Structures are given as C-alpha cells and as structure tokens.
Length: 324
Image (cartoon, rainbow, N blue to C red; front, side, top):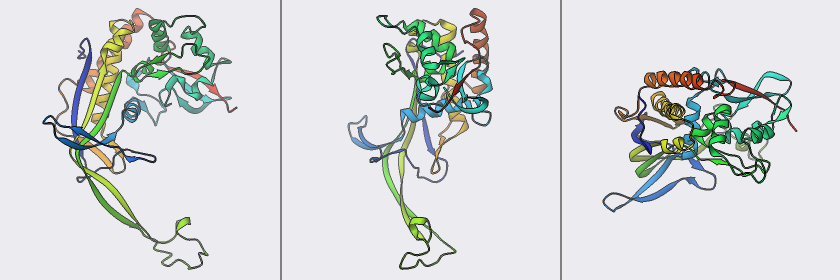
C-alpha cells in the first residue's frame, strides 16, 4: 500500500560522491555556486551549498518517467495521456512533449501547436472552462488536466497567457532538493594539451588559443562536504484537495514515489563531476519499484473502470507545430 497521510510524505537520503571525495554543484550565471549559511541544531553557523535546486530536481524526477530512446513515457505509465508535439506535415518528426517542456502544458511548443486545426491555446482554455467573468473551478480544471497530462498536477503548471482567463496556477505537489553541509572548496586544475601545435606564432597567424589551438592551463573549483542530503516531499493534502477521488489521489501519489525511487535507484549522475550514491539503504517508507509499478498499473485500471474518459485518449495526444 502506498504510504499516505492527511498531509505530506517526507524523507531524506544521505548521499556521497561515487568517485573520490569531491563533487561539482549546480551553478548559476553571474553567481556561480549557490552557497549559504544555516544554523545547526546547536545554534552554530555552518557553511552550506546547494547541490541541486528544486526546479532542477523536478526536471530530473520527470525525466525518470520518460524513455529518451523511445521518445515516449516509461511503459509503466501506459494508459496515461500526454501531449506529443510533432512537426506540421510530418507526424513522425517528434519535436517535444508536455513531459519534456519546462512549462509543461503551458509551454510555447504546446500552446502554439494545433489539434485538428485548432490551436492548443484555445483547446486548453475550453477544456479548463476559462472564460470572462467566470470563477475558476479547480476540481473541473484538475479533471481536465488529468485527461491531458496528469504529470502537470504533480510537477505544477502556470497558465499565464492573457487568453487563459484567470491565469490558473497549479503548485508543485512533489518537491526535492539536494544540499551539502559543512562545505569546503577543493581547488585544482589541469592543462589542455596540444600534441600537434607545440608553439603558437607570435603574430597570431595560423590560429591561436581563441580558435582552440595550443596548450592551455585551467583551474577548477569543486567541493567537499561533511554531509550531502537529498530531501523529498509529496504533498498528499494538495493532491487530495482537487477532489478527484481516492483512487486518482493514490495514483498520483504512487507516481511521485515511483519517480523518486527510480531516480535514487538509477543513480544520481547530475553532472560530469557530480555522481552521487545513497549512503546505506533507502528509507523503509519508500516502496520498491516493483511494488510501486504494480500499484500504478492496478490504479490506472481501476480509475479507467470507474470512468473510461478519466485519462482522455489514454496515451500520447498528437499535435502539430510549425514555425511562425
């Protein structure tokens, strides 16, 4: 049984570098590594570091449920809908999907694509019953999203276009972040060697370092930490608030846990120099992939038996996109 409670499912997993003792954290333009200071339980200040942000972890959780080679959702989610975007005039020319886009159903490639000659911008507005001088019905909208792409309810979506009256927003129901505590810099370097061009011309003729010729020394900064921790939360209360019924709520919760388990089981190679492994066994409250897979398969069947249209087309909804 999927572990649920009236509020949230929370757990943490300690991590360590899979190779050596250092790791490369996430970085941001004009900022670099995101360092911060926190108070420990004893009231002391501790230098900390953001290893992977909430928004990046959301993408990684979604990615766990997507088969990149097949350009389709993982087989365990067979029967669930999503929007598949192909190039206009060529249904086999896959471009993207609502599972891959940063803004999901609200992304430009989805909203500007056409379904049977009608722009998805209008299709979404109609299915969500967005109209002037009309209050937003969150349960009705949630049911509409369930029939377009249930993952939008898990990972959040913001319909911010002016044509979408009321600009409804659905908050993220599954969140994760990786932080490192008691951190120190590990400064090192290297040298890009050119075994062909040993010496650059003084006048710059023939190409120099700007063009990639010659031997170039470089420096790099990685980090060490006393503790690296991945934290996860599934907001069961938020999912329940949509009024979609116990089976749907349990299904969405199970999908969230499946994504988390799959991500932790499959390895956390976040970047070239950031490959992390769990320390010890995973939390007991996190079911195995086999248990979650069985649970998801059974709940998809139960939901469709109760309402054959609950998941719309029950698979990829093809829409055509063409450049303006």
